[in-house]
Length: 195
Ligand code: PAN
Ligand code: ZN
Image (cartoon, rainbow, N blue to C red):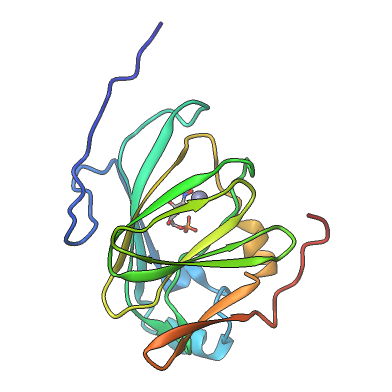
């Protein structure tokens, strides 16, 4: 038997960074091109191409059944038109793989949808443990004025399907509404041909 060594990483609770992360993904607005609801607002904002979020992948572990991967995501505050900064959003490539999110700082929303386009919304603040069940697509949105940070843990063989949401959009939009937010149906959402 070959054993993988136990490992721990310190998460900086002030800003969500993991200084010993084995990889950091940086997503600027250009990486999310076409995902925001207002094309003109997106084109205008692309001139500055702001930082939208970073993902700190903690440990370098085998991407195979039985392991767990974990990471922090730090979403900057900001908007494109009325729509808050958000992650790309994905289904898992192995769609029956679940995930756990744990809010560390700031405030946001976990937006989930079934392949048929049923939307659920889970508000998140520091201390919120939110469950992404198998088969639900998921995206997180920063609805506050400071970075929204959460920890995610998920099966190492879950993988990513970004293509479905890039093609069809997300069925719900999270829009600024006074000091808060509202979730509205996405008029441009195109239902997948088959679930
Ligand atoms: C998270 C996400 C992370 C970034 O770790 O990957 O928040 O979001 P996108 O992957 O949609 O850009 C997760 O859900 N992993 O499965
Ligand atoms: Zn996921």
